[in-house]
Length: 107
Image (cartoon, rainbow, N blue to C red; front, side):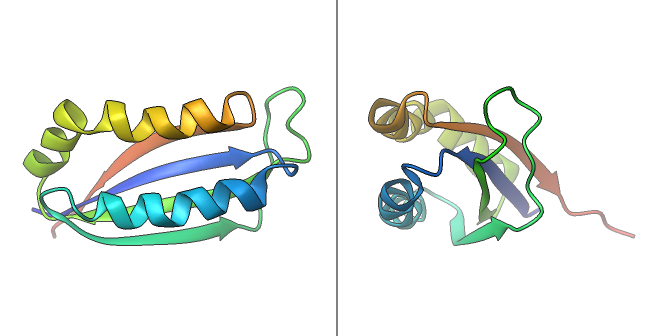
């Protein structure tokens, strides 16, 4: 059953253009993992961080369509450390990410 893997981002305004320039090819690379069928980037126009010092930060959501939870778990087990590490290394302290997995609700 398909799932949506969602990465919510809070990005410091000083680096948002550089972050997005890095993120777009990163999202294309994500589609190379088994089962990753689509990647979309959304700007969260209503984003407001509750974290201290982040009141001017900008919100985005990277959304991935994955064919099965098994393939998403395979990514978590074998690819996520490397993929996440690159962004952390480049933008430490200038962004924050949190993730969730959405499962299709069948009637």
